[in-house]
Amino acid sequence: MTALPILIVWLGAWGVNSWLSRFDTRLTRTLVPIVFGTTILLLWEMIVRIYSVPSVILPAPSQIGASFMANLPVLWTDFVQTIIKGALTGWIIGALAAIVTAIAIDRSTFLRRGLLPIGNFVAALPIVGIAPILVMWFGFDWQSKAAVVVVMVFFPILVNMVAGLAATEAMQRDLMATWAAPYWQSLWKLRMPAAMPFLFNGLKITTTLALIGAIVAEFFGSPTRGMGFRISTAVGRLDLPLVWAEILAAAIAGSLFYGIVALIEKKVTFWHPSQRT
Amino acid sequence: MTRALPVLTVLLAIIVVWYGAAVWMNAQWAQDQAARADTTLTTDELIRQTLTQERPVLPAPHQVAMGLWDGLFGQKFTSKRSLVWHGWITLSATMAGFAIGTLAGITLAVGIVHSRTMDQSVMPWAVASQSIPILAIAPMVIVVFASAGVTGLLPKAIIAAWLSFFPVLVGMVKGLRTPDRMQLDLMQSWNASAAQVFWRLRLPSSLPYLFASLKVAVAASLVGTIVGELPAGATAGLGARLLSGSYYGQTVQIWSALFAAAILAALLVMLIGVVEKLTLHRMGLAR
Image (cartoon, rainbow over all chains, first blue to last red; front, side):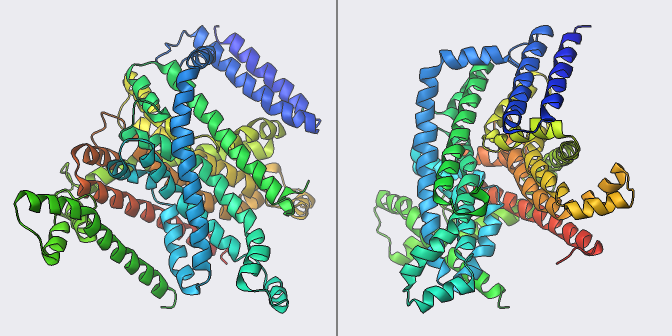
């Protein structure tokens, strides 16, 4: 009998959504997922309250929100330590290194044939495992986290960038040649712009990888701040609302990171078919 | 041969660089030992010592290879020092999670393709969830399940399933949508039922997409399992091997476990590649 209100809310929200989705306008297309998300949160809250689930197993969204607001300063230091210092630094270094390497190996067919299969292979490996080694080498602070991130993001970006540099057509390259464009000019004016959609694809994939690398590396040793550190200590104290607040912060950071890169992509590759509306 | 030669050259270059780095990084320790013993090392001795240390900063390739060989074949398979045993623990959790995640992903994709409400409700969240570092939840899942009395394979499998779920879902939705208007109209003119359209048109044309995402998913679920083995308390599996190696400074052990994981990942991806080739060939879709 206690399940009745839960069922009613679920069916009601589903009915609203089926009704909304019939219109298929821009407004309903944003409304439907919002309704769905709110329903999930509502059901979560109701299930926790009605069945009095202990907060050690699953805290209610309201508890998580309260913990998030109460721990804002802590979350901010963790954010700076893990996301800004660890993930972002590593991501930028790794991306730059991958782009430079891609341009360098692009000049030699031999190197490209040799590195691409290896790059593809390495991109599928569990690279996070390298975290304990790098923590040993670079110490507990953010440098080791940045190093893990560099290794994790390097190969996906490299593979995408090399594919992007090869994406020009022979006709376009011939045109550059008839204009007597030297290598650098044709690289800068033709092939770099043509590679941008591929590059941004790689950059977007690796935003998540960067966060994962930075957080997981903290499980192997960290100063007394940082998201991974906070998660593992809060789990030890069974302070699950704080853990979830930390995950919420990581989720927000991840979405923002991805969103900013997607926004830059929109500005840079405005000419690409996938960006036209 | 023209394809293997560049790869082999690059591999060789990597090994050479690795040896160089091993000498360079381990030199400090060897010099300190020599200074303590009041001896000076010739270059020859120095290089030999850097490549044979018990706990080097960076083990040389042959040390890792020996550690790997010893771990794989030097022990009884049931021994706790055997990488085969640890690998099996990891593999079983990975496969369980992979199976759950793939099934859930395909089921949800079928629902999304057939119901517009589900499409509009779930799809934006599925895409958004890609930008969230789900792996960070892994240790929490383990601890929560442990506090509820569930340990062993299941919690790790859930993390693996969660990670392999999204690539399959996204790839499968894309794949099931590949049939174009013309093909769907043709099915309609043959008076095909919805089930027939699904089994004879949508599902076959989605298979190339499915296999592509399965490769991503199996690699992701292996990573998930290994990270799931990291939190304190885990004593079995490649992830636990990494962690204990990092606690006790056993660098050779870390590198062997890492390479074992890499080999496992490569084997799994290759296995799916073979299945893909056979299936697509049989269906006449092979390129």
